[in-house]
Image (cartoon, rainbow, N blue to C red; front, side):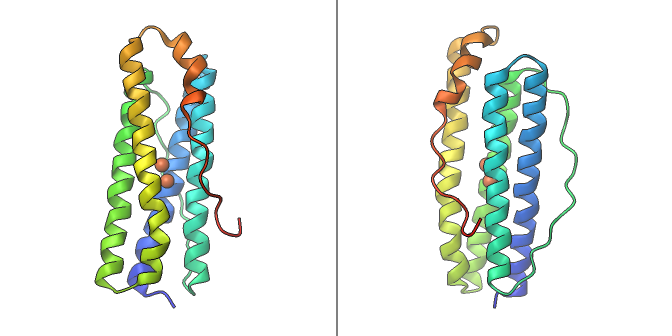
Length: 170
Ligand SMILES: [Fe+2]
Ligand SMILES: [Fe+2]
């Protein structure tokens, strides 16, 4: 049975992954409204992955005898200045999520919860990839320049790495 402290911090992460999904949906919707269909596809796919991350935590908490709580999510912004600023925000958010995962890892060691520690390793690896893929996008944007979005929008889906794992039992 999972300890209360671990259950609580996993529930906090359920909220954060859910918010990540909503944030990327909001960005996708903005991109779609601005004719950036490639960027929108990338963000919709990203939103799906974040929902899958949320599901992984929900299923894990319940499997360990805890209670996963489905949270209300705060409303993400609806307007973004431009694609570069938006992806800078994506990177900042992913760095926040990495720190959040690392905090749970630290707690599992303090609490000697090696099952949860093991469960988290997939997320530790995933965050390295998430940050790297957004940094690649920012590098490309830097090369292309802010005003040449046509080519970038056409090519962005080819920068995506394949999804490495599906959630257990999902
Ligand atoms: Fe995530
Ligand atoms: Fe992410």
